[in-house]
Image 1 (cartoon, rainbow, N blue to C red):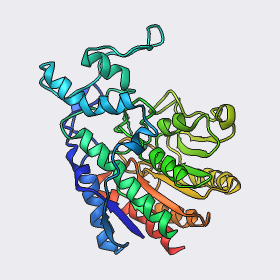
Image 2 (image 1 turned 90 degrees about the horizontal axis):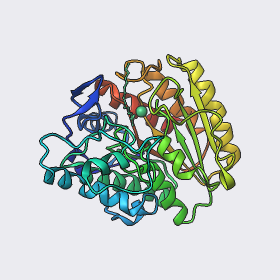
Image 3 (image 1 turned 60 degrees about the vertical axis):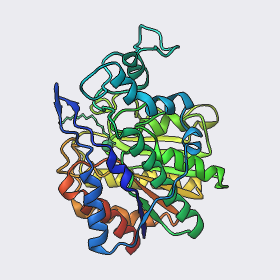
Image 4 (image 1 turned 45 degrees about the vertical axis):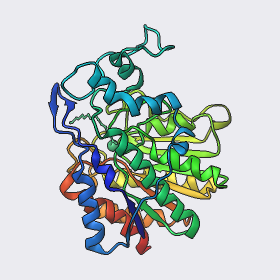
Length: 343
Ligand code: SP5
Ligand code: ZN
């Protein structure tokens, strides 16, 4: 299988993640991409191709133009305010205040557009987030033109990013942008299967009212885990989208047998939907050794479910999402891809 990457995804070099009351080195680090690229070469998965540039139009087909401009300008506005550290939201519109206007001050803007405080914006964020979209769209183009599967080595990840919100290490929703681009290019129905440990709240929100993109997610129950405020099983979509949103929450500590049973149920739903394209939001933070995930998948389990996914027999686009056990991230992500290819 071909993979796509872009060196500019490494330009995001944040030094600050708010975790447990401390500013720590971010889990979502550039080395993640290095490890996956090294493993792709080590196992001979296939060529690692450079991404093409697609510009901001496909991004704005999913995200509000004002939000895209905010991500573009946030770092310079933060610096102009005279702050020394990285840009972190500290105040929000909440259940008892207004959220119908965007404040002028950068602190107000950050809270307006952020859904979590752990994700800082720094000098390379805009360029890396755009490059991550280019990676996704380049991989999509290969799937569409060849019918062959492809892997987009996206970074930063995307599935927490909503129409006008960033957080959970995500800025632009790579999978949603690829799904929208595939629709624009003629695919009638696209299914997104999100196997990241965390619920893909952003992807769900973007397509919640639509039936042309099915969103199916396996994740830790939001009663217990980030992103907390979305991802329960009773969220089934609205209006035309009713029935086209399917959440499979699992309890903290779930093992592979439990996870695999949910995957089979999710795949039956995808098969019945009869999509022209399947986009896999590939987070490998379900790994037992992941520093923030509680699920208990072993490295060989990733090979197993990669094989299982091939059973859908659909054009398939894999896009990298989370996974923070850096030493094993290459093995686990590439195991899914080699498992898929071997089936
Ligand atoms: C793309 C992706 O995987 N984003 C995840 C963002 C999670 N950020 C919040 C992490 C909070 C970690 N809480 C850890 C509890 C450890 N026992
Ligand atoms: Zn995750």
